[in-house]
Image (cartoon, rainbow, N blue to C red):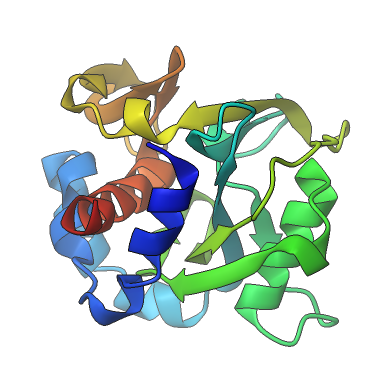
Length: 213
């Protein structure tokens, strides 16, 4: 999609009710829905984080957004695809500030160039005990990414047109913290399998955008 048309459409996003769990639950195995309902007490004690779905024009003025492939490490989200973002620090005034700051740190986009459009529905991540607050943001121009080498393995640029294709929703068997192996719904984006919390956030974004575009 042409980025100028996208910007005109996205300006109306604040007036649309969030689809919330109705969208998020499309991308979770059935047993996790019940687990999420049982985790309200854990959520109250969870660490907080902000992530950013950042849209921008590529060199052909096509609407694009960025994801990152995390480094392999000894942790719950080793080697997974995610949005840029991270935990709330004492220096952050808000979760939005945390999301924007971490986006700068992880992929090198200057903070002053990012315009945050809307906060989305929060997602609780049991394995790492984080309550994650996603935001949608835009850049007016194509960025020159600089990845944070100690945390980011690769920067993944996804065209909006590819993301909106229904054929990218797949079923994938993965290893999770709940079971050795379980079949989950996922997005196949540029050959990367995206599941779990990131897929839940992407599903809400997709349903929102389909109402606008």
